[in-house]
Structures are given as structure tokens and as C-alpha cells.
Image (cartoon, rainbow, N blue to C red; front, side, top):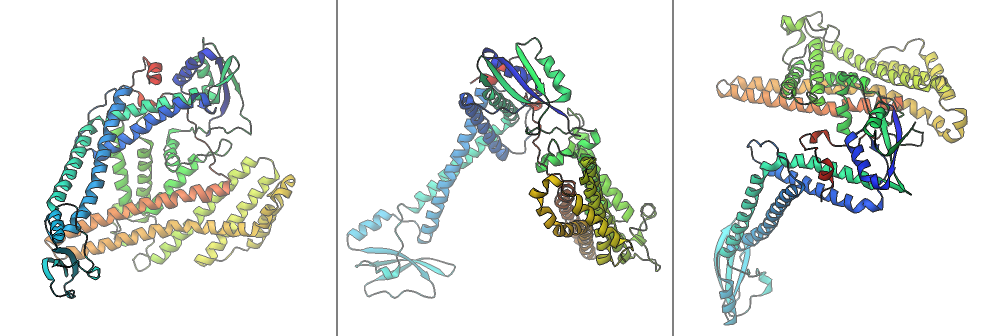
Length: 624
């Protein structure tokens, strides 16, 4: 559910502004909505610059670190962290500058190398004495014609091209396209290149040595982020005569805690219910089993608006179901589940337990394992008629039927899974419109949502007729008339018809879109079937390789491992593309969910900065 919010305004005397901000920082529950004032912009910009420097240093050191284990983080003061970050930035800049110089010198060497090492000053001296030397290149099969009194000296040949020196008493004709003399000897350029490479190596070695400070810099970064938040909030404190005001939102359940945190302080706390004009942040709450799907919301950057519906539970249920059908293989599900269990074991002692992403991976893995079991799909190795007894006991005949000849009935299985996809689409969209009808309450628009439910099932029957060859039910015409009439008559409140009349004009296209949305659930069948086909192809390749015996077995093992790993990665991408899409677009559009929310982000010390000494928290945050 979406936690109810209270709008909060905190007032204090001007002299107590810093103390007010610090108290709110320690409370860690206020989502600040006040905007920074001009008076605090300089300090805020300085804090952001320090944070950006740390971010750059962390990125550089993370790229440069070797495979050695990193030490435990130590507490860094701001000046020490800044010094380490500046050193890292300097080493990286030095390496980048040396690499740019090396690239220029490499071009110089490549141009000069065909002519060998010589002293350009000596060539210039010969020219002053009346002996002209020109460097030229030409295809071996097309030697240039030289005038009398001119000699050609071949210096090197490579890839059909000749590098040569032309010596004459007269300047060489431009028609021969002479190459400009280098500015220095080849050995000097090579030595300069090697010096730049040495500089790059030393800089990279310095970065690798400095990488041991990564854990400490990451902890310092949390403190720097806190400092940015503190300065941002301090700059947002508005002065109104003799008092300062800070506004924001607090979850209703935490208001009493905020009052307690500000008790015995010279401040005033005013609360009120949010209005329709307020941009209220969204804080998602719910049972622990639902929280795992919130990691998907965070990953793709979506959150429902404060006044919108929280679809977390249904999103999770259908996402797991869609993922199982898209991955489609019980063997893959077992791998995902075992990998998640290993990650669970390694992270279970962390504060808060294993990450929600690990919990979600385990749920998806188990869901895929169940789907693979009931469809008889295990690494695409077995046919339904060949399943071992233990696997055969879990197979559902309707999803993986066996024909009268004792072999798998692929045509029937395809038809049944496609039918299941249409049913899932109709049920999914029915839930969306049913939920929308409940949110409409006792208004005519609820009848329009019921009309859309009827339209969805009409499109389901039409899809089954067009794709699967099923006959339309006898009540199809009546269902169409009643549904479309309910939508057309009640979709727009009478007072809004003048402004929203175009919705009625677009109704035919909306009905077509409804049909397309139902049919779009066939992607579950198409992607899942494609994954099985790819797995079967790699299995056949591995089987052919194994027939050679000896090294063929190793080749077969490599093909099987590589092929199934690639297929599993493609299936994971399919879950992100198709499984998430069906929830965030099709379902959400029919529910009217626009994902227009702003995440609740309380102002306060980051939980990740628990290693930071809080004894002098205010001085740490304000130090320059």
C-alpha cells in the first residue's frame, strides 16, 4: 500500500536554524519540499563539488584495482578523503595525458619507420649544399619515372609498397609527392614513446596501489552525500521575519516520532493533510513477501503517484508467472534458484537480511522450476513421452499432452499454451479494469470500466477465433453491444464532455488497441518456445560433437554449457523486456496508472553510513 502522508511545516528562530536542520537530520523522516534559497547556494555547490570528486575517484580506482581482497574501511576525515581523491584524479589525468601524447608519437613512428633511422638535420645540411634528398612511397608495381641525374634508393618494402629516398642535384618535382621530413630521429621518437608508456604504467600502478582505499572512500562518499543533503536542506530554510520555515512531508505513522525528536526544542511543528495541488512523495509499504518487487520499481525508475493505486502485489504475482513462461525451462529455474540460495547464504547476516533482488531471483527461479515441471521441460532434453518417472509425475497433460501414438502432441501443446496466454491476458486486464471500477466508486464511470471488462473478453473470444480457430460464443453480439454502449455512455462525466469529447471520437481505435493488448500476451508463448528451440539446437550440436569421442566430449560439454548459459541470459533479458512491459504498460494503461509518483526520500543520515562516528555529527557535516 501507499503510506498516508502529512504535510509538515517546522518553524524556529533564525538563530536556531542550524540546530533545527541538525535535529531533522537526526530524525531522518522529513521529505523536504522547500527549495534552496540564494543565501546557501555557494555552500551547497561546494559540497556537491566534493561529492563529485569522490565519485570520480571511486570510479577511477574501481577500474584500476586488481584482484586482491580489499581491506576493511577506515574512517576518513573530509580533508584526507579529498586528498586521496585528488591524488587519484591527478594520476588518472597524468595517465590520460601521457596516452594522448603516446598516440601522437605512435603516428609519427608509423610514418617514419619505413624510411629507417636517420638524422633530419643531416638531410637538411645536404640540401643546403646542393644535394637534395626526398622521401617517397609508391606501389611496387608502379615505380616512378625519374629524370636524368636522379638516383632512387629503396629503403624498405612492405605490403606491396616501397619506401625510398630520391637523391638529385635539383629539387624533387612535386609530382612525385615527396613525404615531409620528420622533425627528429626515429630512435628519439621511440624513446619518447617508451617514456610515455613508462609514465602510463607508473600512473596505473599508483592507482592500483591507491585502490586499497576504495572501501574507505565509499564510506566517505556516504558522509559526503549526507553533507550535500544537509547543505541542501539548510539552503532550503526560508526566513520569514524573525523565524525560519522548512516544509515537507512525513508518513502519518512517523509524525509522533518526529514530534518526540523535536520535543523540548524551541520549534513549532504544524501538520495538515495534503491537498490536490501538492506533489506528495510516495512511500510503498506492505508485507515482506511483496517488498521484493520494489527492487524492480527502483531498477527501472518508476513509482506510482500518491493518489494512484499500489499494484505491487499483483505486479509480483504476474511478473513471476510471466518470467516462468518466458524462461520456460525447469532446469534453468533450478539454476536460478540455486544461485539465489547461494547469494542468500552469503548475505543473510547483513543488516536487514538478503537484498530484495536476491529474494526476487529466488521467487522467479522457483516459479520457473514449477513451470518447467508441469510442462515437462528440463534443459530441452526430454520429450514428454520420455520423461523419467519422477518428472512424469509432475507433468500436466493439458500443457504437454501425449497423443494416441504415445508421442508428444506438439500441435495440441502449442494450441493449449497459446490459449493460456489469451486467458492470462484477459484475466490480467480484467483485474485492471475491475480495480479501476472500484476506485471510481459509485459513479457512472464505474459502469464504463465494467464495459471495458466486457470488451476485453469480447476481444479474447475474437483472438481465439482468429488465431486458434475457435468459434465465437452465441452471446458475442450482445456482449459487444452492451460493452461498447456502457463505455460510450459512461466513460466521460457529463461536466467534462466539452473538454474530453475526443475520447469518444477515438473509441474505435481504443477498442482496436484493446484487441492488440490481449493478443500481445502471445509473446509469452513465442519467447518461451524460441528459448526451447534454441536449447534443442545447442543440444543437437553437442550431441553431434560427442559422437567423435575423446576431445569430442570436451567440445560437446563446452557447447552445452555455452549454449545454455547464453540461452539463460537471453531469457533473463526477455523477462526485463516482456515480463515487466506487460505489467507497466498493458496492465497499467488499463488501470489508468501513469507511474507519475515521486519517491519518498527522507532527509537524514544514510543508513549505509553507520560506521561514521555520530558523536560529533554536526561538526562533521559542517566542516570545510
